[in-house]
Length: 386
Ligand SMILES: *Cc1c(COP(=O)(O)O)cnc(C)c1O
Image 1 (cartoon, rainbow, N blue to C red):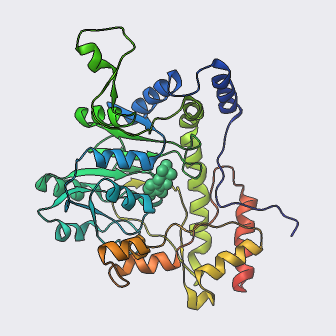
Image 2: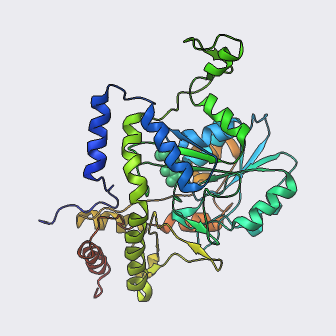
Image 3: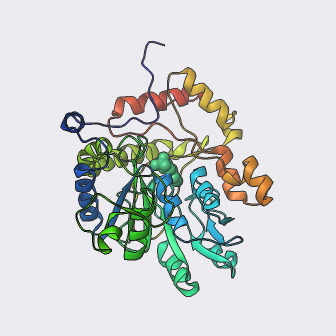
């Protein structure tokens, strides 16, 4: 193979972003400071939200939003088995019991029509995941949450730029957590943020993200201007650095262009694969939405393809093309089986998806010729004309 390796994802970092990182390094202030502050202002404007708190990752954001609930043993948090492990891990780390609701077979999103049955007296929150950047059906979800007095923490790691019925995810509802990991739609290296319309929650997260340290509290006791702080509660170390925000300041204005290119490529995949029996393409819901196309994830049909998902991924790798696995159903990991008694058959849609799903290469700098290479390699693997 002479062609260079085509990864399934690659971030697009502009010259301006690189210069900003260098300027930050040379400024003498590299941890949380003026660039994080500016980035948070930009995020608030982008979302039209009163609070956007920059953090070291989305995992940190989920952990803090859940920790702020101060869960008691036995308290339940409802989420989906078709997600990255961090969604469930943080529920457990915050002291909650993860309760799962199966996903829709075609959108891979939490099936909101099954949600009511999962709500008990112990339920405290719902954590929907906007899979691949496709919005969950939020109207009925929020209606149920309102009826039962539940917090909604949207795992929006895939969903910056996603819209539901004409409204941007992060612009309405309760609380959203976004990821700026390099594979996501925009990046700060590692990083994430929590967006909320709840003043008290924002205050709590601001405290918890940096040791539980409060400078204002000292000032409130009448010693303004001093270097002292008070520890209000034992907190975490989840702050974002200015080096990271330097990237974010230039990624956010580029985001819309990134999503446009992702959308073109995803639509082209959808069109090309329409008559391939080897694939079942991702479906779309009936309600109005804008898909952010963080991932393009068809399901392999092993009988028609004459190979399973893992053999397909290996075959593509041998042809110098990277693919991704997002995700195996989380309830089947050993920890979740052993601690919560989950077993195969519990969530059939998530299990079927989790055993057949593949992320094909998709990133803003990908050229049509790169995509043609992916299609040609798949055709060769399956023994069909591209
Ligand atoms: C990436 C991801 C996370 C975690 O994001 P990090 O910023 O890497 O911590 C959480 N949930 C989902 C669904 C993700 O894809």
